[in-house]
Image (tube, rainbow over the protein chains, first blue to last red):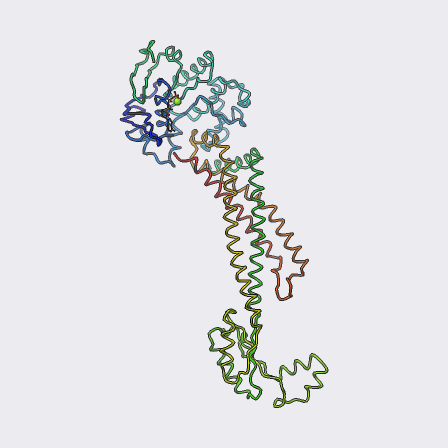
Length: 231
Length: 309
Ligand SMILES: Nc1ncnc2c1ncn2[C@@H]1O[C@H](COP(=O)(O)OP(=O)(O)OP(=O)(O)O)[C@@H](O)[C@H]1O
Ligand SMILES: [Mg+2]
């Protein structure tokens, strides 16, 4: 069984907008997948349904054996602990240091202090921020802030890392550095799903690419297949 | 152990966030303070009015004057008849008579009068039971003061009763005024507590709105709903307690001062204020409990909005 299975999923918002139509998709464990497509085609909606920020109107989504649509509101946190999420705008708490921001995700789980320390330092090392642990977010560059956000997303060892335009606010060089971090995480076994508008990144990494248009999958390129297609 | 650590962290975070969001906390606390002062004042007022009414109701006595030529055996019969009336309750028995219905024969009354003045002693000392102009009486306390006039009439109907006297009119007016005031003040206290709840809830809601990001992040990293709510609930609790400090100080010192200044009664010594101890401590307890409960519920409700999908 694949890690993520999406079956005939449709999403209509309360406003009446249908963002996703009859979508089918399978994602294997350990895969690195890009989701691309023009603005408003439903990319964010699709991944929001994976971590149950939105519920599908119809159809079925299975993530790691859990039927996401059926999870009760009170139990959503159990799913969230299996999935790390990173956004374009980092979403760090400004009054906490880099270390504290990452530790926050473990404190919420009630881990003992020593264990938190070991895990946080390890993951800060992985994203290359060990020496900036004590800095506050407003003293960090955009790329560094995004690394903190990534560190926080993976510190708990989730199976899946979902990124919604993680490089959207970063220059090309910094973006590539972030991509190197994500590739390293992927190599450690984490499945990565990344929404992006940055075609250069997509071309360079040669991973699986899913192209959405008006809420439908119009192309599903295997790793390395995506060349210079027009969006 | 694990949940203890989480709880511990929640409490710590709540304290931190009260200070971190200082201006908003101050707004919540001031709002709570002001409303709780008003709540406290109205509770104290209401309880005192209640107390006045009780005192008056307990102390209003009707006096049945018996016919002058009555024989002592007849008095017993009248006494028994009065006891059968609806609005009369026997109460404790004191010297073979009920505490609420006490006969006083004319010789006892004469003796009391003579003891109180030498002039009376000289005049009245001569009289024996036959020639005394003083009447035997039965003093009656009723259950429901509002039915006093009806009961008085019923007693007058009894053979051998000459006339029944009580503070007709004024007593009833006073009591019915107090009853109205009491009803109004109870409604006012309830209304105030509700208004307080809304005010505090709103202030806390604003506090929490400014912290949506924090809640969003907590949800994202897999904090359970109860874990997201707990720090905010503790925070509401802390704000409620902080907000009740000044009202409690004002209640304790204010009431004690007023009580001492007025010598413990209003207008007449009959209308007694409730003594400050332990009254003010009960009031303080009520205030802090209202503050805590309202604070907790307000913030629990405010967060809930952000926990739905
Ligand atoms: N919460 C919402 N309520 C109502 N409609 C929404 C909501 N979120 C998104 N939509 C609508 O759903 C459609 C898809 O939006 P979505 O955010 O998924 O697009 P996207 O592909 O992520 O776009 P972008 O590349 O600009 O981020 C859009 O028409 C949008 O207006
Ligand atoms: Mg989007």
